[in-house]
Image (cartoon, rainbow, N blue to C red; front, side):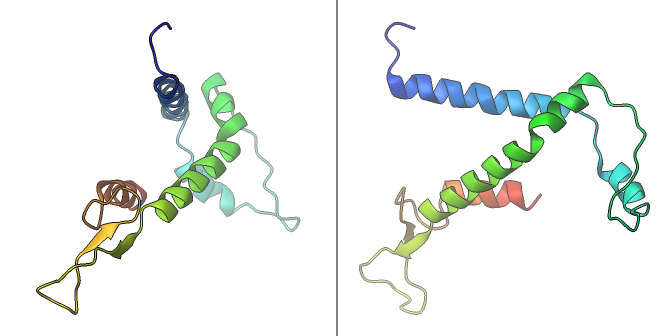
Length: 123
């Protein structure tokens, strides 16, 4: 790609990776109801004997799910570490509730990044 800045290439690569993960997850089967049923079958050794049919999409998703969840959790934690409030300084009309800004992006607190994380995690 001629004429594309390195940062743009990184952004494109990361966006493609995230879209791939999302697509793979959307194509796989939801397991919530199945895990509720299977949890009642846990044996003395702490395992569940499973006989099930898995699609290719399920196997593809499950193959990388653990690492991807760990990576997303780490991403979320790092973003929260970066985007946290700090006193904006200056004179406030309410000294008990001073104006705060985000330490990273300097938007008024809570910043758009924090609100987006909160919105998606609390779903």
